[in-house]
Length: 169
Image (cartoon, rainbow, N blue to C red):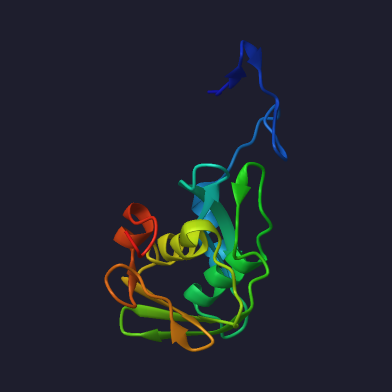
C-alpha cells in the first residue's frame, strides 16, 4: 500500500516541492469531469538536461484560456516555464507572435532574435511536446515569418526532435 524511495540508504521524505511523507489518496473517477470543468489537461512537456542536451519529460498540468486551443496552451506553458533544477528551457520568455494549425501541422511564429539554444534544443523541446498532442504530426517554426530549416525542409517532426541534433547533420 505504500512506496518508499531511498537515496543512498536513507528514506526520501521530500522531493522538490512534494512532501512524499504524507499519505495521499485520490479518487480517479472524479478527475476527468472536474478537469474538464476547470479547462485543465495533463501535457507532456519536454525540457533538456544541462550538459548533455537529452530531452526529458516534465509532466505538467496545463490550463487552457478562453478560446485557446490545446496547442496554444502547451506553447504558452513552455514559454512561461522557468528552467527547473537540472533542466534548461531556452524558450522561457521567448517572444511568441502567433500559432496556427494547417491540417496536421502546427505553425509557431516567434519574434526576430529568438534564441533556440545550443543545437536548436528549444525547437526540439517544442516539437517533442507538440507532436505528443492528438492531431499534430509536424511543427513549422518561423522566426519573424521565416521558416527555421530542419534536416528535411521546413517541417519538424518527432523524429527530428529525438534523433537530430542540428539541421546541418
